[in-house]
Image (cartoon, rainbow, N blue to C red; front, side, top):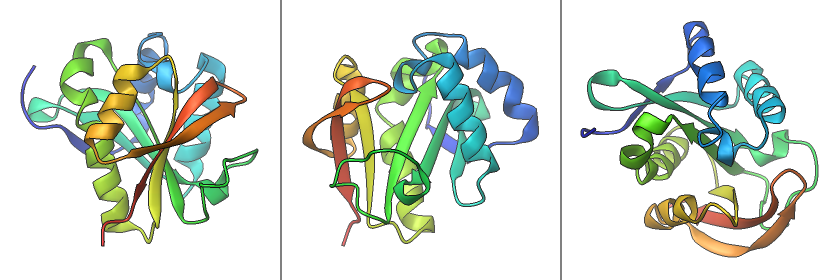
Length: 165
């Protein structure tokens, strides 16, 4: 697959696609187990302040789901580097679109967050077992801050990108 990677808002009709992708273990690797991923996506979709997007490839072909949520809206423990105004980015890609989009999604999603919000930074918590995803965040300008013991993923890299000046 070739062509530019894009994002479009999620619609009600996209629910079946998202559920289908969640059945793929490789797609939901960045979102945890299926039940927690479904719950997190549902909460983000209900929030007026979250950015919920369908990842598209050439000719608008849907190949994945991405979301950005301000960390102050999420419950639970957070690393101290996740200051208020930091947006947490997460995404999943269907197996058919994984290679082409993996390198582009963190950059495209972070650019949208910075263009449409007052975010001070964007971050990602990526399992230490997902080295290719960590490399994609690095290529998008994110920097490693530390390893955080995430209750869902276990040891995870905290990647952070500050708002461009």
